[in-house]
Length: 152
Image 1 (cartoon, rainbow, N blue to C red):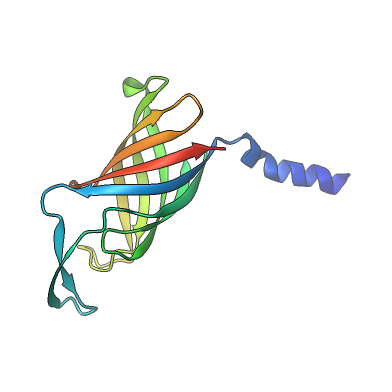
Image 2 (image 1 turned 60 degrees about the vertical axis):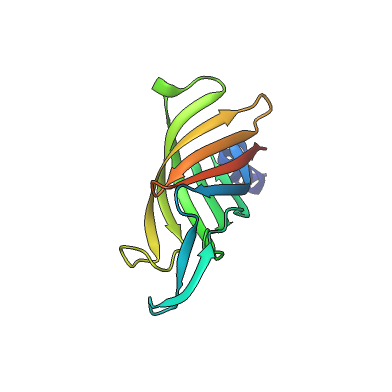
């Protein structure tokens, strides 16, 4: 009985939390939709490639903390860990404005030469009656990102 009580106490925050599953994503690069490929030594290879704008994603949220793995614009895999905060000033039952704050990895050539780079992303969330959410975010000032969340 004692083990059962301890087990229930350990999983109760998960059961009481607002959980959601993140699936899929698309992005649109505002302006130029191509980039010059570089090798591992930051040398240009001469190839011009189009950004990947179908971003296969899978992740989840436990309340406001989210972890997601995704196919990035450069056709490689990355991950993000972030907290979502919303503001009452721009919120209704079906529409919320907020901010994602966290870290993202998977980008090889970054201005700060780090495996983890800061994530500060304004978001707009559109809620449906059944818990499905469509989220629009702006990343790096020139990439519009759309994801789907399903409440469970």
